[in-house]
Length: 109
Length: 109
Image: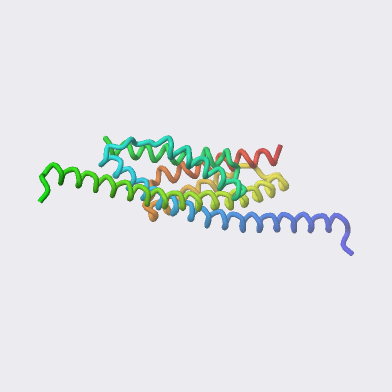
């Protein structure tokens, strides 16, 4: 049987190694999810670019408060199902919409 | 043959109808992409929550500037491949990281 201090050291090292391995696994998942997010955002902006050009060609306003209100309600409900903080989901959509409106304005200028 | 003004009206209506249909199609795609984004963010925060708890249990700092710098470089490269504005991709990752750090700090308190 090993003396208590030696056991303590092994346990410590084991825990630290296990934590480091777990951290690595989570980070690998996060990196893959980030790739999904970036490509999905790329696709989303391709669509909003087309919408912006349609709006500019038909003299429609760059922002659409009715549509935005509906999107926020829908995303908060999706966030609940996805176990994502609904306040964060709203902040996230507003962050994206600000970028979209900025882009729409450049088409209209 | 219809008089020119009548043709003009039809063309106008056709264009407007086509634009409205296109707008609807793009918005349906945007709504589907938003569902992907929300669920992917839900999954991402599940992993960062686990990372935060690991860090709190092992007294590791909430933020990790080295890891963040690597993530930003990687995401900017992914953004280029996805035809997404790289400055926006960086702003987006910082937006997410701020939320993650805020969450990590609550585990450590």
